[in-house]
Image (cartoon, rainbow, N blue to C red; front, side):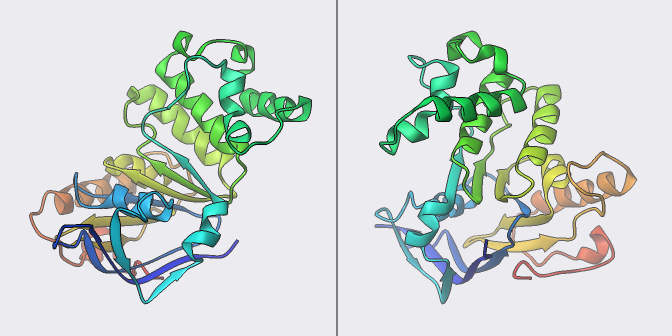
Length: 264
């Protein structure tokens, strides 16, 4: 795996003179969780969807560096959305195997065995034959996680995948995802500072018009982190920053006594 590097990036939607972001610079390191948070409409999901190759015919984009190129990156990316997007006419097992079907691959015994193994990892081996409509919200998101893992891509893009869940289910799924995706390059979009601090090995705040990214030194523990005094102090500082009306470079001395740059 190689880093995803974006330098001097500007993006605007076709027909819109205002840039969503401009001069954006960031590096996503391999096998690292990066959490990106910011206010609604700041461009977080737009950045993620562009990296996923979902906006190429809808936006104007320029950058001094974007590597690997989108056509190369396309074969390395799996996307997990806020909605589980399970197909109600397919069983849980067939939903996990969906990517193989869409790619024209034969869904054979070996494919089913791999899918069953992943369902076991997410604690749903006994639900393989069930209909998605018979599952709870947390169970459905675990199926979506298994479907994402089934694609076996090196880069996983997650757009607020746990935001609709209750607090306890969300906490459990965060831990499960951190364990199962530990060897992947994960980009997590979230509105929740606590989620960013629990899962982010790199934590970025996006805000401003046009938007810029600012980096926060994460807590020292490995992910998924437990809440402690350091965690709570940084969370409070993030909330204060997000409540501001304009983008500014973070005073990381207030956050944790140090500073770093989003491009590092």
